[in-house]
Image (cartoon, rainbow, N blue to C red):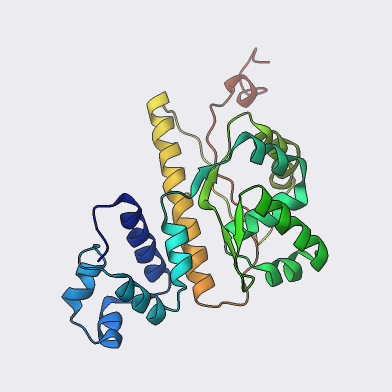
Length: 250
């Protein structure tokens, strides 16, 4: 039996529940297909009385790979990059593109098809990512990231600098009047504490955005497109805002 108080087990169960929610799998469905009572399933989803056999059975009903659930829910998944990993990713834009697509669920064929990269180049990138300790490739060719989906990089580090040089310009050059652009713009007066609370909301929303992505991936929707998401809040320079509006302002 799996010990529910073990932190890694709790993380696995938490990940399992997220994946079940993303796939729209209900407790009633699990109970019916597994031939057990609903309260039993609820106990399992709290980590109580859960065995590897039961966990594997739940994954089978939900169309999940037990190994993926365990790997992604394991507490040893990185939630931040090492300095070397950041430096290498920042220096190779193609490598970074492949890695972040894998973090978001892409496999080899999808990367080759959707990014137009040659198969041998993708293979080379995968080999480097394995050596960097950022992914694992199973015997059947399935790719698993060794980081969480919400892996972070250091403020002012190599990836932050690369973002400044490349990704940021993609956002700032977009046509905000385009029908496929979705954005919210506003201004509000906030303290430092208020700004911190807004940033916490961004982090929660980021998790929700990834959840939506997993739901659509699980549903097998064919019209999904890679979309950039940028959330930010920054104090305004009022002299720039009021330039030309206030007499004497420069």
